Length: 230
Ligand SMILES: Nc1ncnc2c1ncn2[C@@H]1O[C@H](COP(=O)(O)OP(=O)(O)OP(=O)(O)O)[C@@H](O)[C@H]1O
Ligand SMILES: Nc1ccn([C@@H]2O[C@H](COP(=O)(O)O)[C@@H](O)[C@H]2O)c(=O)n1
Image 1 (cartoon, rainbow, N blue to C red):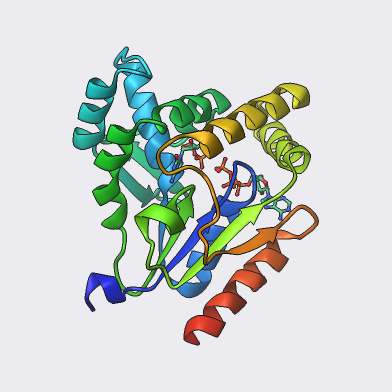
Image 2 (spheres, rainbow, N blue to C red):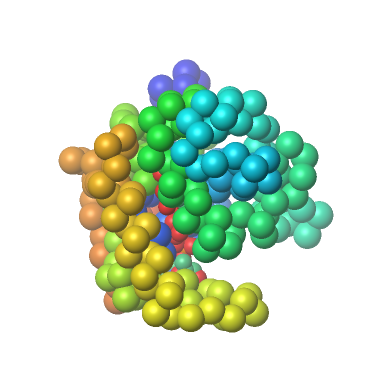
């Protein structure tokens, strides 16, 4: 199968909309590959921080983006793991601080350009579920199905708060809400690849929908377009 024939499902939207959760479940149901593009931006931000590189040092950041080796794999218990140059950074990249730094480096056009090919390389048979901010608009404009997930900012902050509490990381809801609002503004207003629904995306507000209902809706969209979803 030629790359362009490999079907892609894109899931874009703001932080906490449920993209990662839905992407993982749908990819498992379809046995398709999974691209968590936000993890790549997070790994870059972490690598820069570890190297003492400022979040606006374009040349140095582009250098890291071109040379870092990011691996996604399952550990011996089947849990997803992210490696940076062989080092396990799965937990380190998940902090709110790392997400915030990622959204700063993500405004840089040179960085986004350097990461484009690495993201497109995930398109392999039998198919790809790609989660991010510009999957349907820039990285895979010819995707079979494009979904834009959203939810109210209060709901997204509540979800993130519950997630952090569940992980035993005490946090504060008003601070999370403020961070998510600031990240939304940065992601939606940047000059390059801003977060917007692709013109041909199906927009789904998940505020009062269960994860299962969203997964079913996404699978039904794929079924409608290709007849291949279970
Ligand atoms: N429809 C939903 N209803 C309730 N909780 C949800 C729903 N979808 C996701 N969640 C929960 O919200 C939290 C954030 O979800 P998730 O990480 O999938 O969001 P995301 O859009 O990928 O965010 P980010 O872009 O920041 O990675 C998780 O704890 C997840 O279980
Ligand atoms: N395709 C993408 C994916 C992510 N970003 C930026 O990275 C930040 C972290 O992403 P998460 O999905 O892991 O929270 C995000 O806020 C974006 O700024 C991006 O620009 N493009």
